[in-house]
Every structure is written in C-alpha cells, then in structure tokens.
Image (cartoon, rainbow, N blue to C red; front, side, top):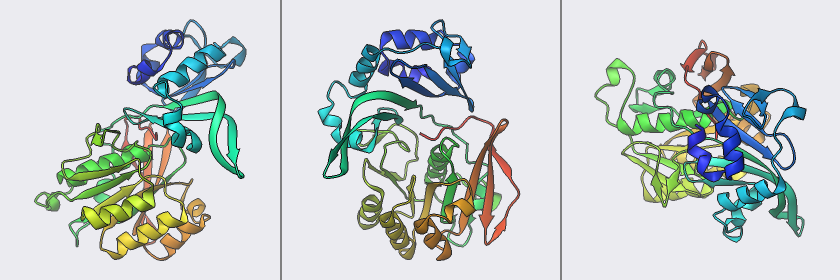
Length: 331
C-alpha cells in the first residue's frame, strides 16, 4: 500500500518508509507525519513509530523525526505547488488526492469573523490510504436485500473512524450496480441505478469526474459535492434507485435523505458512531431512525481476525458475522 502514496512523499521520507518490512508496507493504512516529532504509521489495526533505518519501535525517543523542510516539501507535493488552489480543502482540514487518499492537516487556523477560513503553519499530516476490497460486502449483502423491491433496504452503517465503512459501501455500490445479488432467488434480478454523493472524493476516487475505483456500470457519481445538495441533484437529474453517501450528520443531510426516501429511493449512508445507542445521541440520526427512514442498521467492529458486522433489522439484532478477513480502510 505504500506504493500507492509514495509519489506524494519527499525522497528522504519515502526512503525511511521503504526500509520498513514488506509486510508492513503491504498492510499500511495511515502515515502520520508531524514536524520535528516522531514518524508514526498505522498498519493492520496497530500503530508504531518508525526509526531512521525503517525499524519499528514503541519508544518515541528512537523514532525518526521529519524536519520542517520535509513537511514543507510534503505540503507542496500534495497541493501540486498551489496552496491557493486548495483553499476550500484547507478550510475543511483535509486534502483528497488522486486515488481517493485523504490527507488530514493540523496547524494554526486562520479566522474570518470567527469562522475558520483555512490553516497555515501546517505541522502535522495524516495520510489515510484508500484501497479497493472487492467482495468485502459479500457476507453482509444478503441481510440487506429487499425482496419486495428487488433492491436493497435503506441502511445506516455505523462505526468509529477506520473501521471499514467507506470500503464497505463502495463494494455495496459495485455489487448493486452490476446486479451481483448474493442470494439464490435473486440471480435474475437486474442491476440497480446507483447514485453516489462523494463529497470527499473517497468512495469512487474520481479524477476529472471519472471513477478510478470500480463502483459498477450503472453508477453515477456527484464528486466533491456537499452531501445534501448532491443527493437532491441526483434525484432531479439521474433517477437513481439507490443513493449512497459517506459520513452524514448535518441537519441538511437528514432532510435530503428524508426527501430521497419519500421518493422511493433506497439510501445507504455511513455515520461516525460506536453503535446504535451512540448514534441515537446525535439528533439528526435519532430523528431518521425514529421515523423509520433506515430499515437496517449495521454496526462495524474491527477485531484481530477481521472486521465484524452486526445487523439490526426490524428491532432485532442478527448474529455477528465476519464481513471480510481482508483489511478494510475508512479514508
């Protein structure tokens, strides 16, 4: 996985990471670079610091510490040497680069009338590596099938960050779009028209409007568009049968999802929450759940042997089952 983001890294930093064990590079999920502080990486659900020779360590004292010059070069590469062109992304605190990889940023904020206008003096980066895991939703999909509509139930996927939500709904979109229904009596169902609102360009990883991940032949993507606006645009223009969105939570997101539901469209969405009880603590999610907009809720939990799911449907929880033994990301 290091090879997917190596082109973004200054040579010195890339050389350090290329000295790490191959197994670590293959399972790499995130790279945390902090100016004059220890280099940290996350892989296969764990995190450790990295020494200059590529060795992994738990002690921050032994770790390689990227300099301010390294961080400056990193920022230039990630913004294609044009900070001004990335003004909107900087205001949100992250940059999405080609391939769907998201780079979180931290530093000194610039305020305008009390609102954050951007970030300057950036001294910390978190590169979250996106990956495509074909089949990661295969064990979950049978539980989401709506036989009456020959489609999918409206579903809310819940998990904390980096549990595999984005990877999962990407595979759901691909399967529904192709018509790869994983139950015997659905073999003759056609694929569904899928609309993805990809606000952070992570689900489909579009480049100039064209998905670089396989999200299916009947899928239309509204890229780099706020979720609420994107859902309404898709409803008006692309007649989707299923709409997908990542990380909902704002009031306007809830209203757009409600509008899609009233239009007979299934909605598959993710949200940050540890479980259903946690989600009910967020007013927008609680209202959608109480109104029955989502007929299925999926809780994802990461364990040493893979990512597990628990489906809550019609008020009863189905037994937990492994979604995939493959490592899934949440960029």
